[in-house]
Image (tube, rainbow, N blue to C red; front, side, top):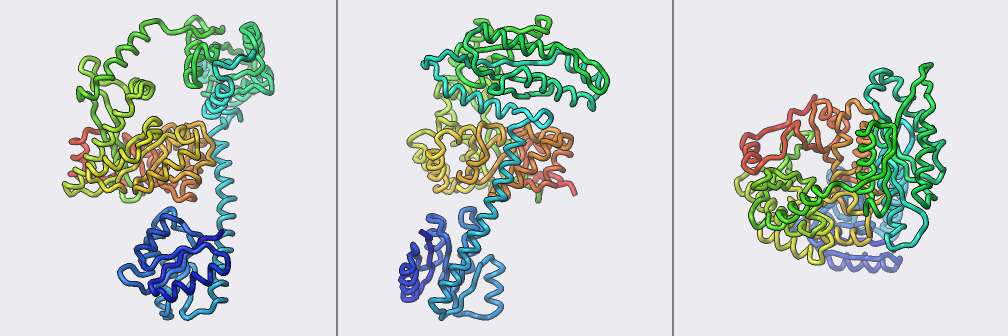
Length: 579
């Protein structure tokens, strides 16, 4: 049922309009002044708004201006109702984004025709927008999931496929089919590149991909990961012997010389093999262990295959020591929060910061987040650690505001364990109350892969967070498992484009096309974009020309301790925007 919001301070007029619309089977909600109208519009998101112009405190123009600034209400058809009929009044409303202007008194027919016209136009725009968005999503999906040179699935698609295969084969499930990961690397690739030159390498890569296709079953998944690395996920293998036969078939297919522009080229391959669940419980572990097996084959001369063998016991001891130290690190105040500036790409000014946790161990020095964050996730220590980071970052943002610096949006990473906490909303409210930080200056960052499991529940949780006034961004966008279709369902504010797409973007046509498509799609969804890992002037220039909203990266500043970050604010450091 079509929902219409009526904002009118005269009770008799409001009641007449409500009665008229309900007779036409519209769902009607109402507000007796502008402030309540804005609240109801944002909370219930109607299909159309009828609004009086002349109201005390917040008039119709102010209502429209505020709603057009909000992502959730910015495109709702808006019709003014007013007794003022001057051209200047009409012009003011239209410039603010009104869709129509009805002069009081108006007839029942005039009102219904105006509503029908605006709803029809809105549906047409939504259909056109949906088609355009679908095309953009298809383009982005293609760029994100397939290698441009070979047309094969890339690492992102491979991870998604392998994740699905594992989900369909839980360890307790009795099945004869093996889940196998085969990592294939072309040996001495740098020498091949040097001898052939960049123009001839591409045809060779395509030829290698075609040979691997020929040696594979149509049901197998063959992916191209890097220039000289492929991964195969075969189907229908029920024993180690069948895996060996498959591997030998691949090697035989690649053993025949390749003819590239009249030049004959022979290659050798190193191959690593691992099995689920024996060699890894998830897709990332399996891919990593297949790579380790392949690297072992390379170290032993190459041109051979090796099965994965577990790491020496030394690695397990280090993990145990790390886990033990991590347990006490928070109470021993060994963690620090660093802040990386986020810079507006129009003004060049600092507009925010991402809070990043660092572990300064008294004996080992600075421990990489890549080592302790996954361990904290696994052990559950990420919950108290994440809450400490959130509290520290909010307190710091408020402290800078109290010192008179421009208000900065503070980005804080939220882990999957934190998101799934039953009392997450209560914890967020308590932190905001304790630090006295306005929630609009807090942005919680979630990784893409976090939001694709149990999507409906995730949407509900994120809507609860957004209702507090907190903003939400997707971090490392483009590297997760999911399709882009979820973007227009989630209550998001920002997409952060992963650094792997930004690195050398001025020299990488595929990354350039992908980044432009992401920015264009985000713009269609009224989402802001932040480019991560910007390190060169050429990368910055490309992003400015592509209308990216903001950046962070070493070109402007590395992550800093709070005192050093404050010095940037004191000095009013700005990013020189390329002309």
